[in-house]
Length: 509
Image (tube, rainbow, N blue to C red; front, side, top):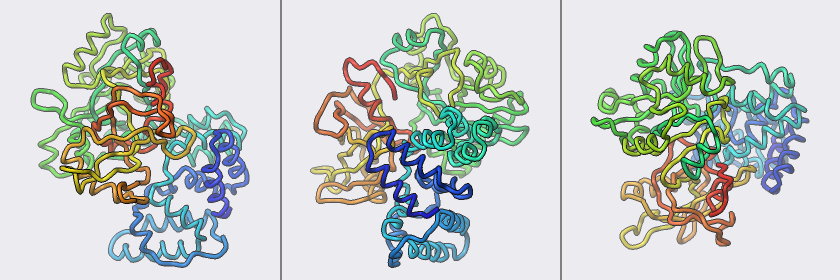
């Protein structure tokens, strides 16, 4: 398969707004893809090479001088092979060798193919929203149920692997995917609820747990081998030795646990989120001693050879209590006074509560209505689209942020507002240095950036507005923090923003 065909399909996705039209474009391409190039084609079109992040920046690519090819001749397999060699090139002299490999690849690409490769390698194509569209396209091309593709994807964590299974072995191959201890699966997600009363009324028999202001972790143990992953499936085992030691001591042979971890003050209150996240990038012994992490687990997905994904939450909670003991997140099952749990969580310095359907299975990778989050204030995770230069005391700093919500149909983020409120001097300095690294263009007032950074925004609500493309605007938006633990695919959708409009009870996020 020619790379040109993939590039053409990518352009076709951009030109179409209809989700069905996008699915049709992708399904047609997949139907004609050779088996040995299918995985790479799926990976390219969902914005991530099969090798993962290659570690090549926009600046490096833009400095490579090579005339583009006049006609398309690169194949998907050749590009995948070149990127594999690039990813494997490390050590002494690797910088020069990587430049040579990139220059050779780009010299064989047309101008359109080069632009696609630039965006693929720098993460600009990695919207994540296209994953849902691709799942439907794989199902259409292979004539299998979309739910079967989705489940295989969530269990494997790799959409190209699920696509290959669907196209080569159909439903039977997809159903062969199981939890594999040591291989992370995509986490179940929650949707916002308007209030605690609304959440408990919607779900019926529930568990109500503290919603912690920590970092999501997924822990896998088989005998003495313990692995720890973030919500984006990045392994952080080497950085969190106190967590691995603790899990190694739990009363089991094998287990997969879902939970949160956070650093606490001496009086047991949560430290700022940024302090917890700082542990995920440092192995310095003095930092480990000074800032220990405490885990709080809220789900058990596998225990001693038994997979629990499809078991109701009440059974998974029973398994969790038996294995995690004092490290279960505070909360109650079918509480008599849910409001008391919410008050206690807030008093302890946490965000609110999670309300969970006791009869629900663990829907890995899905954001449905079986888990509802209740917080006293509205917050949204939005994509940074740009920033305007400040005035007065903020002169010389990138200040007023342009904010976008994720398009669930795979398009670029949709702008929903701006804000300069809540930015500390530290954040101003950080984003002034960081945003130009993601720059796509600029004018006299604004630096526009490729979708890469997620920021958590607190707001009073949403109102109808013709000023922004999404038809809504944020009211009194304030920056809470950047979210380095989240990718653009984890940002809230435009539907979630619209759900906050007065009188809208949909609540989907």
